[in-house]
Amino acid sequence: MSETSRSLNFIEQIIEEDLEKGFAKKDLRFRFPPEPNGYLHIGHASSICLNFGLGLRYDAPVNLRFDDTNPAKEEQEFVDAIKKDVEWLGFNWDTERYASDYFQQLYDWAKKLIKDDKAYVDSQSSEEMAKQKGTPTEAGVASPYRNRSVEENLKLFEGMKNGEFDEGTHVLRAKIDMASDNMLMRDPIMYRILHRAHHRTNTDWCIYPMYDWTHGESDYIEQVSHSLCTLEFLPHRELYDWFLDQVYDSSKIRPKQREFARRNLSHTVVSKRKLAQLVENNVVNGWDDPRMSTISGLRRRGYTPESLRNFADTIGIAKRDNLIDVSLLEFHIREHLNKVTPRVMGVLKPLKLVITNYPDGQEEWLEAENSPEDESAGSREVPFSRELYIEQEDFKEEANKKFFRLKLGGEVRLKNGYIIKAESCTKDTDGNITEVQCTYDPKSKSGSGTAESLRRVKGTLHWVSIAHALTAEVRLYDRLFTHESPDTQKDKDFMEFINPNSLEVITGFLEPSLKNAKVGERFQFQRIGYFCVDKDSTDEKLVFNRTVGLRDSWAKIQQSS
Image (cartoon, rainbow, N blue to C red; front, side, top):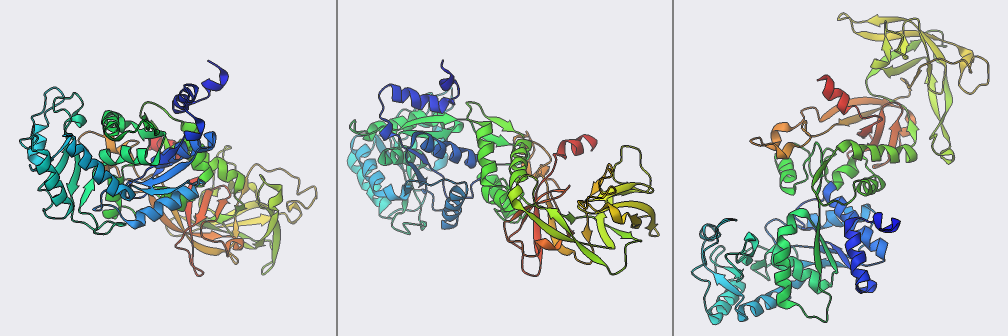
């Protein structure tokens, strides 16, 4: 095997083999086919990257097709959200399609199957049909309506279409093989009656095609060359091909279904049904809650398109389902945000620090670098004064030699500022430290070029000037579930693993340069983590979401708990 072929994933190898066998490259076409019954999640992001990535690799068109065959669950809201997500990820589709565009063609083909005695109207209840289905080791039983005449089936099917019957009274089934080893081939349902308004066709139709009948035929209508699905659709491939056999014209491209493994993400769920349950039960605040695995939730939390694409590239395409640790996703967002975010200072759990020998009422503006990763980012000025906030955890009365932050009698440098020494501290009646008194070395200012400014101390602390600080609501998000695989635990509901500490809302104090920060802008709060401005922000009140900490602390927390 050549070096080039070894670098291909197995889907690309399939395509390369087809090209070697004579399939024309100009006939390659892919599609991303979501059902608009919810918001896209991180699993969909991998599928989007796969299909659109193949389009880019082979210079082939990729359709965005909405498999909108269930008006009971589908809404225009979800269509709009899906389009926004795909565009945000950085991809452009060739044509926007809908399965509902093909309702008439699918109906006409269904009538052809009836005429060919390959489909029939079944008037049993769903419970009766389920009993006749059989088991994987036991053949099913034929419906008593299986041998209805072609004429009667056509008449009933037309009546179904014309709204003459109630929901549940009739279905159209393919006539295949009730003894097939593949349970899906045992006369699957093609159409059911639904007296529901559709988000695009309104009440034009009251029968709606099932997924298996719709999907492959839609691929065929669009002349999709490679229909890529997740692994749970592997048993459906036989039915996909059987339905294609009934309409296939050898002068056209015949779609090929192939399957790849779903990549599940730890400490979350990616089932639309379960995500909807989280929303409906108010466990989270909507589909775009930053704790959700939805693309809109990740975007609101501060994730970037680049980080999700890099994550998808890293995990690749596999043939077996597996669980990906969320820390890998967090690694990619840290790696990207480290390169592109400006540095600012903010204090989230404040402790007052007073520099006793700094002139009362004096202030100065210190130059601070915006990003060590990008020289062109320039610098800004931050105000310095006698009274500052530092983080509570950055001070101890007494500490061992491994504690390099501030302690009584010890020195640290204030970021971009001066070296200070802790002289004393004040406590409340409960013994909690409320204030630290320090002195500073006036000649130790960073960048001043004096010998004192070059003096090294082991600790550097971030801070904000109390007089100039902005107050902001800061939302500290953590993993939504305490178990790495909450929806696969036997005899337990996934809701039992909800992390009660997945959100902590605090008041933070930020440097004034953030006053005009816009919704969606991302920053590194130095020594703390990466944050972005939430859509709930107003001119009067800034709201920041924590995207991710500077380091993965989850494993350490779990080990100590």
